Length: 90
Image (cartoon, rainbow, N blue to C red; front, side, top):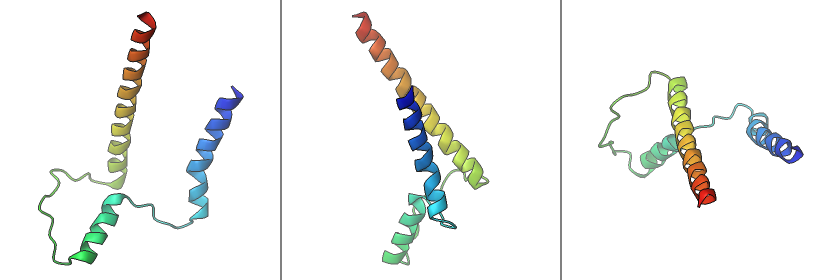
């Protein structure tokens, strides 16, 4: 039990400490960094594909990303549990 609480505390600290160390910093994603790098290399570059649907706000985009991660984690957890159950049966 103590080990789990210690691990949970470490995870919480890893999530919160950067917010206090880098006050006012913008935590952008890799998409924005890639766009800036491409613009530096070739200013005349135009994307050859546009999104079919653009989320109305950053919050909804974050929600969809978190939902996708949760579904993926659920699937992986289910699969691992299923395989462990089959292994214990046989």
